[in-house]
Amino acid sequence: MRLVSARLVLVVLLLARFAYGAIAEVGTSGANHNGVGGTSTTLSFTVGAGANFLVCGLAKRSTSDASGVTFNSVAMSFLQEQAGTGGATLGVEIWYLANPNITTADVVASHGSIRAVLGCMALSGVNTGSPFGTVVAGGGNTQDATVSVSSTASGLVFAVVSRRNSDLAMAPGTDTTEEWEVAGTDATTDNNCIGWGGSEVGTGGNVTINATWTTSNRQWEMLGVNINAAGSRNRVRVVTVQ
Image (tube, rainbow, N blue to C red; front, side, top):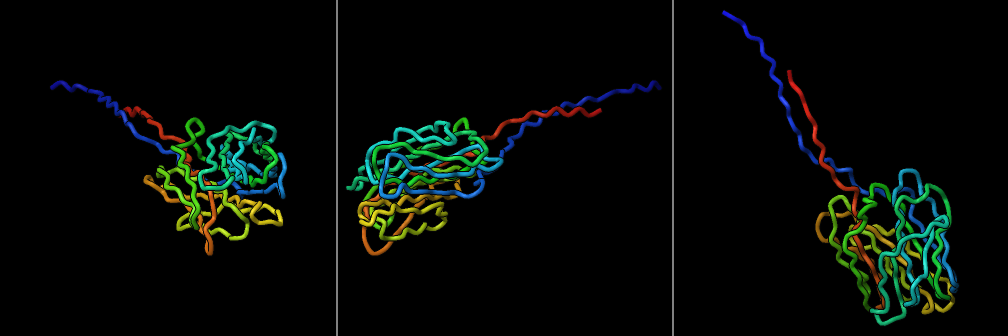
């Protein structure tokens, strides 16, 4: 009998998807107002190690546009504005910067002579090539600023509100995290706006993100958007068995 040795080579192609994980906040969100008004609003802000995205909300007691926002003298990108739909001279804007410098520096919003509140969050794990889903805008004259945002399971829903008057505190809704709530300091409360920022973990479905107050209706403007986590990718692995 003749023995014949053989080598069996098995090539296995394994195709799998590898998710990069969810978005996380780096450090602490922050906000500041420009007092009784001025042509800029400045916030000293720290972008910590590991952050790859900076997102900011500008709340205004005005419908005029900001001319620009910078972090550490680097221009940020404008996403969207919502203004004037709630029956008052109010507006909100969202600005962002991918791969910001890891440092403590000023965020500066330049605008007309208005009262404004500027708030920011630094994030890690963001898909910087395609950071946002569809922006949802809202406005009204109620006791509940709310929008429903289509989310991804690993994403983070971000929202910013400008509400007329500084006399009534705001409270986050169920599952919503309040990131900041800051009011102007004009002695006449009706001259001020409250700037509010919030976030909520994405679910893969619609997320209702909101802030409420009691006693009286107030005009408000709001923007909400899903921030996308870094995407998935396919990996092919070749395994040889002898």
